[in-house]
Image 1 (cartoon, rainbow, N blue to C red):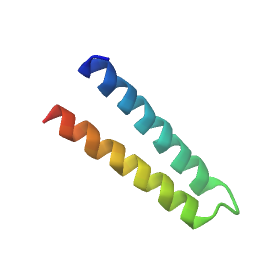
Image 2 (cartoon, rainbow, N blue to C red; image 1 turned 120 degrees about the vertical axis):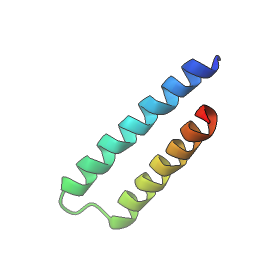
Image 3 (tube, one colour; image 1 turned 90 degrees about the horizontal axis):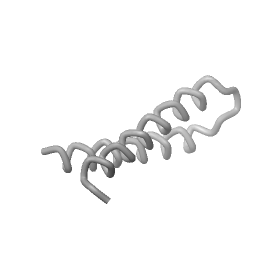
Length: 54
């Protein structure tokens, strides 16, 4: 897998998690721990993207 395709996949996953966080925050009864976990996953992806592009 080339670096550019890997970055593209990471960015897609990051956007998917971003959408999931927004949906979870709007949904009633969603556990705060689930939202926190999604945010942590999103942050890990962001850090990986930044590391690979630096």
